Image 1 (cartoon, rainbow, N blue to C red):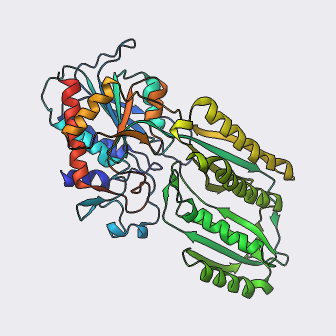
Image 2: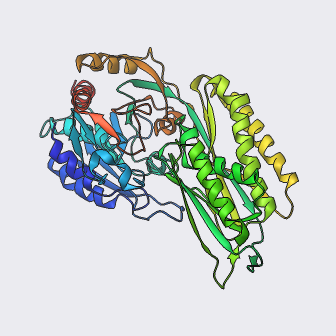
Image 3: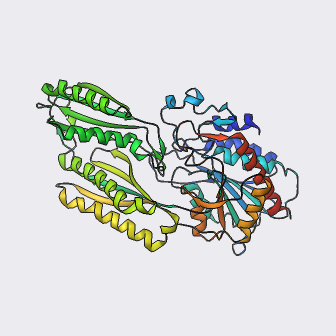
Length: 488
């Protein structure tokens, strides 16, 4: 394994908000040295907080003639952007620098090594084995963007018609299993809009901010009870059960498309007479919940006042959170799925709550999934009638297609044969996260996913890691699968 090359690759900041232009610029001369014909696609998007520097880099080896009627060749793709690393202090295995790969006990630690820069690097190193050789069938290698932005890069690639492969392999963390299908996801944005009024201090002129801190993790993880957002709700329940009079001016839990945030904050205004009471309550709460990580800051509101969140909106936030948990307990957990509140964004005149619904593959057929979605929507939107002077909207941010590639097909059986030859247990199973494979499957491309790292080991979280031995097996797999599909 060429650790140094991978180190340089990971070192480049390609978090989704910054764009992946710099990492693409690193890859272009490497592709050229390998003899690839290059296509660079700038991928447009309308997400306000993301850089416009989003690119797909397509390397074509062999005949690049694309016939819209004939599918030909093998496509290997993997995203090269990453989630935000969050608090660097949580990256203890990397000495606080998530962009610096650290090697320890035959594992590599660093941002994106599992999801999913090392998976792409394995593809690239496998391709290098065939430098200057004549491909008898085309090979397409794509470093795509948008892996952490609703798969915008893969979506654009498919819609552009630039490629029409016969088979597709997506490099994503699967624990080195070959996944022929995967869970399905619906991400829902629930927005409560209201008229924000700037309040004068009155008697509520002591400001309290409580912040929960926890390691971030993938939104498909079942660690929701440990999330920062869960912790802040738990503390707020304690305040609501007390006699402390309060108003809320801050309710925030930032997150990303597939990453729970590592911080959540609750801002309260209280009367000065209650400062000692809330301080004592905070100490008591932390003493009784030693597994939680909370901190409290205190101050005044100043002369300009503070914009508070109206009581109906606060009630709406709490009711939605409770309804989501109840829906999970009664309707989803028993079938192996998950629904959880993953972020809260507060604006001047709105609060937007993200809710992620994950359905198991065997319950993800169109009608079954739609029935669950409709039931969830009805249970949440019923809250709207209980809120005064608040409008409430429901919007799907992403709704993935549950693809299925027949495990008995020649393509899957060929992949299994190559896995065995590469020292990988030829296991075929269900993916535990959603990937770009769903987009290719929706367009009826025979597609599978494989890669190092897994949801169970930890992806989109601090100290993300891969095993060096597993990486070497993956690189061998790609080399053998290219040999089998593009040279015989």
